Structure formats: structure tokens, C-alpha cells
Image 1: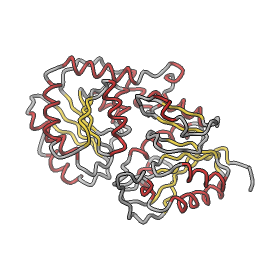
Image 2: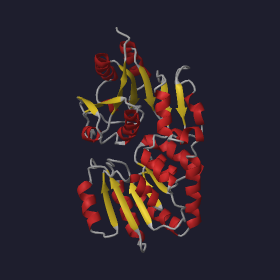
Image 3: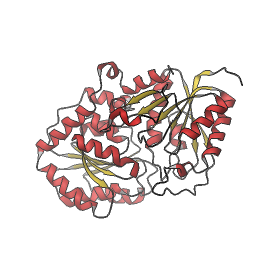
Image 4: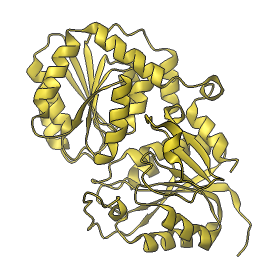
Length: 374
């Protein structure tokens, strides 16, 4: 096998679906944009699950190879997410290896909870490719040359002990969050938060199959506050779009934003957020936005609990029947207690206090610097 590599090409193996959500693709797009600014070509490899984001990836100017999927996967408790691939891990690893062997990229980025050490070892044995893994779960072994864990954990970097090889470059902690440039810009002009709630942002990611967005909206409506503006942010793949449009159109103080590119501005101008525990949690914390946090997937729970323990969010648990009442109670608590809002905001900013050696161009640039050196 030739050892010649295409030094201007990187592949990204990532999926989106109704089950998986959109967060993995979105954070990989953030990374891909910074790489492209360094004259690196980025090519995505995804499976054609229901709810895939092929057009979204293409709209950002990136090529994508779509692989077939059976879409007969249901994630059961204790399944370790392996069924999220839609095919066996051996088939997926072989499919990706064949693509790699044709183009010989400089490295492969993997962002997938169904991929672990066995998949990575097989791909490496077939292609000799260097692998960067993005993973915040720390629940399985990896055979990778670099690992990015952009989450906050009470156990810190030690939770990766024994899960990655000794030669792995490990970037662990919220200070390495893949933030888009617009968030860095918004932070520089961020106004002092007063704790008074006049504008509320609702966002549960791009898909939100549980329609948590509608429940949060109804909770604010039920609270019957005066002079409140609500911004509702959804992805174009949201399966409840018709229902949300109809409800938002009925209320002149509600703005519906579909696949917006202005999310940083919306977070900066909001006084409170209601949302899920996915990758957006770090964007909210970076801008010091107090958040009522509700997990819409099991893999969000540990980081939600950790950030709650730090005091940077109010975590209400996993989305369930009766959550609307809990949201109303917390809304009333925060609405009548500006000092609590200010305290949460300060803790969120403190959590995302990025060191000077990282913060000049933002953490995503720092991650790219490390990636290009492996």
C-alpha cells in the first residue's frame, strides 16, 4: 500500500437522523469551516438515515458521500449506541476504508457514538490512516491519534484513563468547545446581563423529535408574563414544523427562526434560554446565557448533571410527562429572582473561561492546530 497521503484532504465520518439528532453534524461543520480556511478540503461520509443532513452539508460548500442504511435500528438501553450505524460496525468500517484507500486523505475525523476501538482498529489496519475521535461520553475504548472531548465532567480528564492509547493527543474540557466564529464575535460585544427577563430563547436542536419546543413554548405562555418576547429556533428537519408554525403565527410576541444563521446573536440578546443538553449547552455557557436545561437524549444526562452541579444551568431532568409544570415553576422562580439569573450567568462564563493561549482565535482554531500536527 502506498504511504503517499493527500495533505490537503480530510474525511469526516458523522451521521444525523431523527434518532441521533443534528448536533454531531453541526459541530463537525464548525470544524470543517475552520479547516477549509486553512486550505484543507473536507469531505463528509454519512449514512442515509431518515433525518440525514446531506443538503445542509452541501449548502455549506462541502462534498458528502452518502452510504445506504437499513434504518431498522432502535436504540435500546444498554445497547451502547452501536445500532445507530444502521449496519454492522464491520460493514461500516470496510465501506469507509474503501473510500479512504481511493483518495488517501491525511486523516479521518470520527464523530459517532456507535464507533469504538474495534471499528478504529479495523480501519487503521486496512488504510494506515490517522484518526481523530470526537467523543464526550467516555464510555468505551478508542484507538485514535487524537481525541476531543469538549464536555465538562466532575471527574475531569481522569475519566479517560485506560480508554485511549498512550500516544493519543487528548483535548478534554469545555475550553475546547467547537465554537463558530460568530460566537467569538458575539462574546466580544456582549452586554452586561441584568438578570431581568424580557426575552426568552427556546432551542432543542435541529430535529427535536419529542416536540420539547412546543412544550417549552406553552410553559412560557401559561406563565402569562407581560412584555415578553420569545424566539423559537428549530432546524429545517424538525418533524413538528407544521404544528410549530401554526402555533407561533397565533402569537405576535413569538418569532420562529428556521435553520437560522443568527443563533449567536439570538443567544447574546436573550435573557433566558430553555433548551436541550446537546452541543448548544457550551454555546449558551460561553455567552453567559442562563438556561433551563431539559435532556432529550440519554447521552446528554451526565454532562447536564455536571454543569448543573457547577451552577451554570438549572437542570430539570429528562423530558417526560409533567415537565411543563416544572418549567413553569422554574420560570416563575427565575422571573422573580434577577440575582439568581446573574449568578447562573456568572457561573456559565466561569465554566467557559478559555485560557489566553486558546482564546485569541477561539478554541476551534486551537483544535485545528492540534489536528494538523498529528
